[in-house]
Image 1 (cartoon, one colour):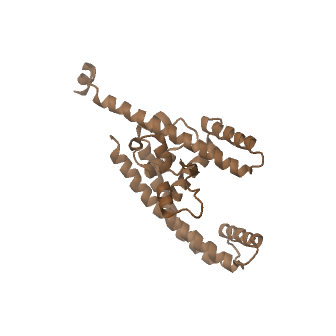
Image 2: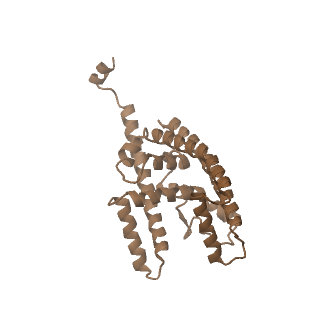
Image 3: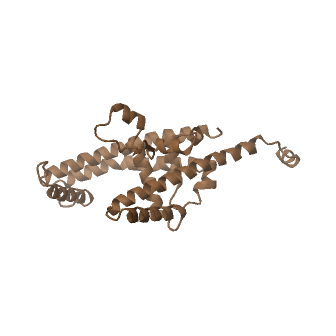
Length: 260
């Protein structure tokens, strides 16, 4: 494959970016726990009270001025800054590399709400899409497959270790694909994918009128994400086949003359 080196670079950058993201999240979680305890949070409190305190802690993290923990909050937020800066730098590098992949200009660029970063993350998590025999294999890699009537991640509590291994489910990969889908819903406007999302959501609600809207939303987003990956898988193979044909075809006399 002509772009093995590019894919390897994207994956390496993504690995480093994920490390930065997870480290930053740890700082957020530790700060949040400190604030909740300071505000009186206890496990035995009613759920409504725990939620109220959690919301107060989140508000303090955004506006710490005047709090007795203001110094600790500002130190924690300051500690995150280099991680956030480096994350942005690595994402920009990933986007530049994604821009060189044949599938970007033929498939990704025309889609509103699907940026270079989205393509880069899929490639980082899945690798060379040519290695997947069909789109369903890509669905499984990204946590969207249905196996024996059960969606990935939806196994019951009593499921065995072997069942989970067979499902090959990664919550982190599924989360990254969810973020891509969320951006697509918000940015695709009147495009093909948001239209599919809206149609599927309406279908789910009509089929089961008692269904909560959030459940219909999740089902519809899942269907839309699967369509995106299916289309991307096809476009990837077609784009790389065109590149191969152009590379292998004989040069015309004009091209030979111009190359001299």
